[in-house]
Amino acid sequence: MPQRTLKPCAARGCSVLTRSAKYCDAHLDLAKSWGTRQGSGRGGRPWRRLRDQILARDQYLCRCEECVRLGRVRAATEVDHVVAVAHGGTDYPSNLRAIHHDCHKLKTAREAQAARANG
Image (cartoon, rainbow, N blue to C red):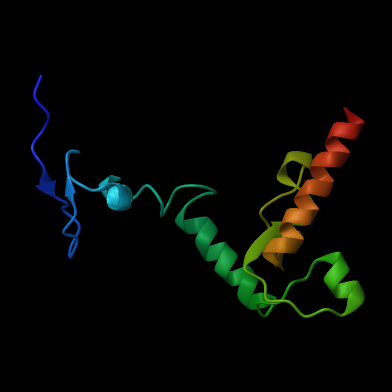
């Protein structure tokens, strides 16, 4: 069976020739359908609005226990559940706080380790 003919990548400004359907390897992410990133995940637009509200309330500063205890100032980029939803926590603003990405990773790892230890 003959190979497909080479065609230019459909991405704007890209001159790479490809045998794939439309895009070169560097632009395959453009082939994904619209709406797969925004709106997906934790609740879509309502969650994003609540997240923005919590970040603004906490002045975009990390409010994790360690940062508060040490008086450390770190920019918050995420929102964390104080009591995890899996443990009965809610999405009410009183159960949410702004948190730095690295602090969030550490907290999640600690919670996962505790869950494994408790079986």
